[in-house]
Length: 284
Image (cartoon, rainbow, N blue to C red; front, side, top):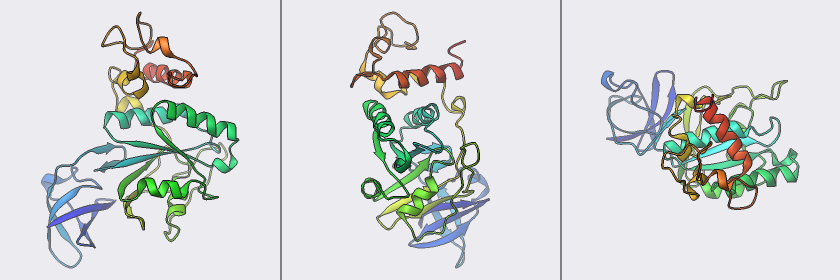
């Protein structure tokens, strides 16, 4: 029988089979190779348990947290409390680009951010080729649009603690009983989720509630030779050399098109690119 892995709690997996959730421990040969989101071949052993026999081929695998068969990642960042950290945001976007997973940037806490900030960040990322939605999990601004965008999909929330991911899930599905973290004295969020769970939404599909993480160490996921092609707007401007680093080479199309004008590479995006290249050892 075919099942769908919908949660992980410690070593245990929850597998949905024909609308019922069973508990399973993977067989020894599959241990460490079954993830939330996987479709699996199972054998029902009793009213509460199934045995996982095999894993179906997956479309993709998000590296952190490890979730399979993701349709869309909501990259959730707050505009205020804490302020948007676009270096962290661009690191996450690069990792998603590498793994071929679509991203929707969700800018939360619009109710406490100046309008000029909202418009500036929205321009920077729509100009880079991303979809951006500005929301407030508190006032409900943008939530109907967001529901339409994620209906019927398996969606993962990514982003730092304190950005309001859990508050967003509660706003989308108010009947859920989830803990919401407080912001610490230094503007950093506190972790509120410890397990990985696919939550079935009332508007179709699943939302994955995952452990938050304060920072992404890009060097764990991306090589310096890969980063130039992971800034999607860079591809609009061909370079003289196919292996251009976009740092100093003559004839570099990227360096020639850095501007705040629409259609160009925004200086903020290029700034984070250089910082990430430094982290990856391309700049001494």
